[in-house]
Image (tube, helix red, strand yellow):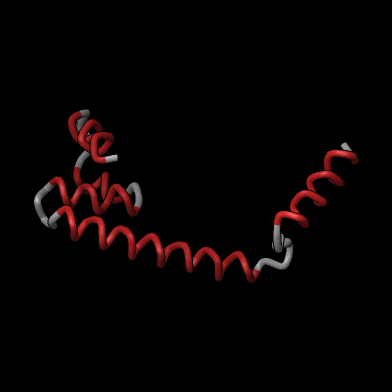
Amino acid sequence: MIEEVKKLRKSGVSWRRLEEFGLEYRWIARFLQNKISRQEMLERLQKDIEHFAKRQLVWFKRDKRIRWIKDKKETKKLVSNFLTRT
């Protein structure tokens, strides 16, 4: 991912624009600009991804149309039923 950000930067994408692409790009861009250390980049990225995932889960749990699958057994049953109907 670091190589991708370097290539984007080399192709003319501004640091500001890179930071708008998302969490990974934001922290890698800051690292490549020497604003933060590699260790800080990894730690902050991990924490931001965890927060983002938690927000997504809360949002999805509010959506009553979503059916949460409990385990492999239920998954196999649902897939089998779906495939036999099509």
